[in-house]
Length: 209
Image 1 (cartoon, one colour):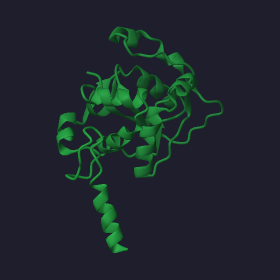
Image 2 (cartoon, one colour):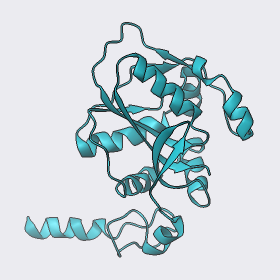
Image 3 (cartoon, rainbow, N blue to C red):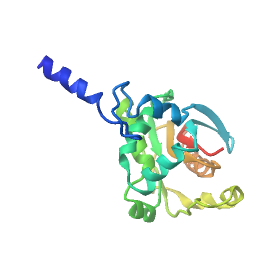
């Protein structure tokens, strides 16, 4: 049994890099050392819409292309990489995780909520519940819009508190894949505050400068 476990451990280190697909025996990450350096991982706090947002990297090449392939081309193998990125930051002390909701139409179109998949990574590692007290009743794509268009879009009307919603958690963590202007996060934060959340933290994989 000991030899079998050692063999499994050895095989796990030989999984190919999810980016270049070369043998990845240098470390326990999903990517090789060269690709990891190329990602320019640099966790930092950014302030958008007067909200402090913790991000792992800037939304630039190759992170931007990876997120686009994950979200629009169903390349879910990149979840392993996102897990590695989230390991680089300190998760705040919270009671629950709130994934940025997407509309039912967008869910049917895409097949999954990318933020919910990211939330599951943190929930599993830290044994936290995923809480969904807010729904998104409509959604306008921000892809291709200017910064002013994103800011002026009436984002508040896109979010709604679910019926008969009672406060369960006062310390929560919002998780999303990309933050641009911060308007969606601000709208979600305001709804959470309306139902009694007192301390709301935010983490995103990448941020648009």
